[in-house]
Length: 315
Image (tube, rainbow, N blue to C red):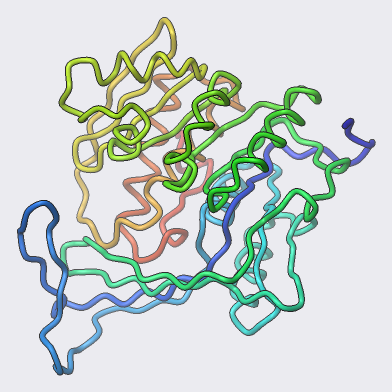
């Protein structure tokens, strides 16, 4: 399938769109436990909210706003409902000059939304309600997807759509950035698609699912190189990030900052790194830019609030 002549985007973000309802309270406690820490509130208690925010979220909207703030011509391709919540998504994209020409709003769809409980130290847990459907091949106007890059985040397990996007990109000289969700990572068919990916972003837990190895295993990074994506980035929260290609490898620690909310750090990292690639920066510079923007995001409540602009990022 070939592109029809139309306005070309620098990047089209493809994936999920939600509305995120953030609630931060010092009363939300963290208890160290194994294998997971616990976030909790006392039963039947009434607690004060320190900060709150309602904002669009999801990988497609978060990354597309980031791309636009970094000076790129960006569009968002996502599915959500025709309801009161949808207005938050449309408003945020319009405010940041992201094209809405690929948004899909079926009449009977409900917009996904999340309630994000944020602790005093910025840790969070997420409760999500998803609509009955997901983005499908028939929702997309393929001949108009004229872009230099596709930035693909979670497709709610739709590996057929991912394969079609990669095939279309290959046919039309479009580069692929992929930040898969758990529902893609848990499917064996994903690995066969990864050699066609120009930039693969995972956190260490996702990388562990993909490789079947603990992040502490001595062959962990060697196994990741075997996926044969052109560039691979592994983020690890407070321990920084690794980036490598077949012949280059870089590491960056995090920037010391006061954490407010960790939501959106991965979206900021990935979109900023790809922005650097689009602007023909070297891998080390791309990594530096990505670390700076993700640090800014975790310093604010919400996934978009702290996203910084091109002029502030590279000066």
